[in-house]
Length: 390
Image (cartoon, rainbow, N blue to C red; front, side, top):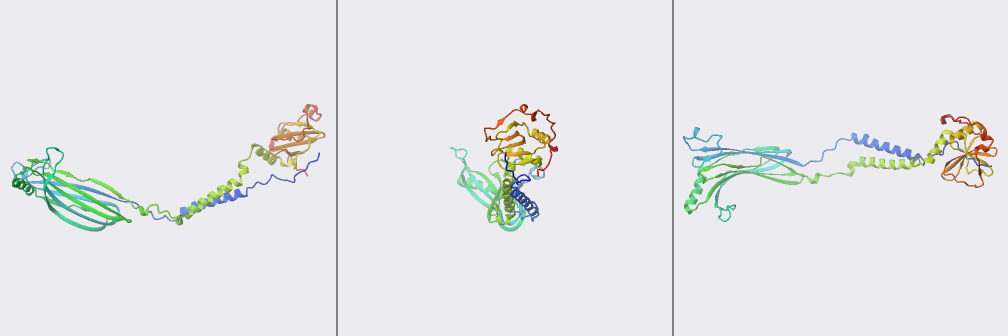
């Protein structure tokens, strides 16, 4: 039998160069991200939405004409309803507080007006109360101011001449012989405007005090927003992601992607090995010194074949017979390990072995004289002989 042997002293080189380059690129990506980006000066925050809060409050105090029925000539602080004929005037103080998230250029104006109205409920629809007559009085004339501030407050105080307003509606009814209902509505109006990164905003808040003028007993109806928060969006400053300012992130991501691809390509044979290839590599790695690798399949024609169950048995035979083990390819996914002794071939098949010569005779080990000899005990794989074949 003639065998062609490969001049190979070690396992075939694996294409791990690309894998090593991939690992280096991943390390570089990590350095760029953690070494450069984390040390980069903190960027200026993108201008956020402008937020402001308005709080309001109204304080009132009713003035009576002198009366012996009330201590100090006026109503008590615990009184919640008042006598129309005794009422002289109503003192009111409007409180307005503007508080924003940051200082901005603001323009604001405010005024206080009183409107005396004569109304008459329609008989067909009690919910409809049309206004028949009205007269406007200015208590605080409009005033406009500009400021660059984060917050400001307004606290105008006025005196509402209740008796004079009641006389107006009474004279109107007598002159025209009407029976109109009368009331006075005092309004405190504040207008605030500004600009946030090109976005204009206007805010209007109104506080009112309403009192009937034609009833014997009345109560004050006070309406205002106790607290109101608003936001002004600045769309021109949002999503201002600039590729030139984030080239480090792009570089790190690119290095990581390329490195990962090269790592997979370089080590794909290690990652996707079949069980046969992994076992063959293990055998070569542990017992390369006692294995001769043939470049083509061995010709076992006329040989008596003894099938060996495990590679450990081959190691025991090699130790006993002092004959090297020949590794012979048997197809793409198979290898036969052979020990020759006279006309007997001991064969261990690994993987899917293709039988090229059907004339090969396979005999039982009991029919061979060599097989009658005692088989030595198996030894651990790590004690396999590493004898080199010259």
